[in-house]
Image (cartoon, rainbow, N blue to C red; front, top):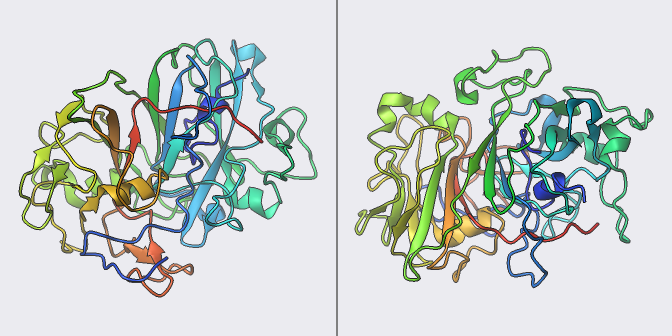
Length: 412
């Protein structure tokens, strides 16, 4: 389960189943996507059969700070293990590899993981989650990579979660709780129902984070505390699968950025945050809002049917501040770029966002450019999108996934 955050496509449903180019400047509205979003293959248009009636799970890593031990350059990533069982007495670590277990094709030497500000849909192991208790175990992708815990190829899953943190764990690997992995509270049986689809958003900070506590969200520990799970938690939202008009996009919106609330304040957000689509972001013309007013934090809006084209731009508000305001920016993002940031394709049209289907758009990341510049070099220094700098997925942006995703079986 993912009460803790992962880089999708590798196995939440799986986790629940038993069975760079130059150019682009921060205020241009067209930042370059990163070489690797950390999002595993989502299974869209793969031609493989759907996994069936089990719950469909899409996970987003909206965490603020995973602590000093999880750093991978200027970013950090997680992988997912889990315990499962039908009662508290028979819970055990599932014998699957920590997901995702393979690096992205574009960056084959990078640690596999779900990086800050990325997500995806889990594949299936064939397990019906409805009757299962799930205990998410958030794995430190940096630690696993350093210890050589990656898919070895050849059809073998390699080292599995039970060998890492289960009853049959290999003591020689020596993973340390709250440094190399974080075990989160259980998710009760009956949470994930058959024929339903869910978005899981991992939020918060670990105990030894060094961020402004307010950016971590409610219940966050003070900075530089002892290692622990802090206020890491998974928010679970059921998405709407019913189709909309064949001439319109169905859009639900989920506000998942506690950093945005901390930067602008609850009162300030009301005037700058009502997301929607525009054809031309410069003047806000033809604005089509997708929420009724400013969205609440960790709240999923009902479906709004809007007309749109896959070259449109998604904005935080009709006249959102695209230039730095007190060090903060809310940039417009064209749908092809959102597609790329979501791990669903390249930053070019046509996109997967087609009329007649529903999508959940999610706002994640930190709009404070003084702490999270829109573009960074591998050493974390700010860039402008050129000379090898890449879009910083810890900076505020939007992701968007189908509310009724295709789920495919996990293959090692």
